Length: 212
Image 1: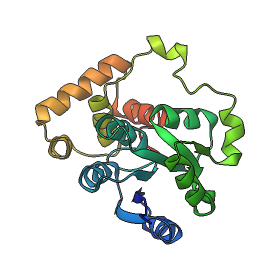
Image 2: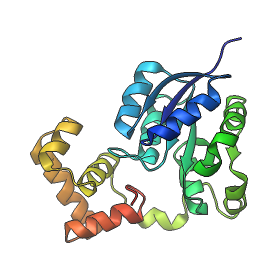
Image 3: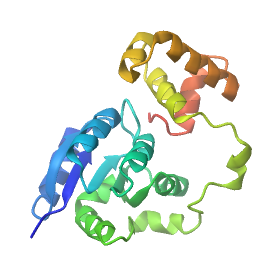
């Protein structure tokens, strides 16, 4: 019997190793990644059926990586893991394309069941987070319709700036010029009415572009 192809993405190697041991009896782990950009490259090359990914990853966070994946690989099933069970984060994950949402504390116990459910076309939410999920809408709140939102590329620039990367490093990572990086930065600062780099970092934390 063919085993489903799984890609694991988390920047904590010990957790990746533990999850790999959990799922390998029933699944084929085709690869692992330790940041969001490595995840996108691996997924494009390995074509997994299921991606298990952390929300808080360096270089490109899990939510933005998921949106990229769903545009390029719409059939892939996404299983998010996080330490955070805030109800609005559950909704954000599903709006980004999730089929399952697990807390890391319970991932080793629940991951196999979650994989089985999503491959059948179903959904899975860690029970402790499900109660909160019932209280929120999986659609974007109407209040967001008139709120300034950075573009996907601008969000990438925000994350890399907030992580402390230089303009030159960001230009290399995104394969664009330093002038283009600067243009994105100042367009974002103007859009969001931010005046300092510290305010940019605060925005990135508040909107889960980076995690502390």
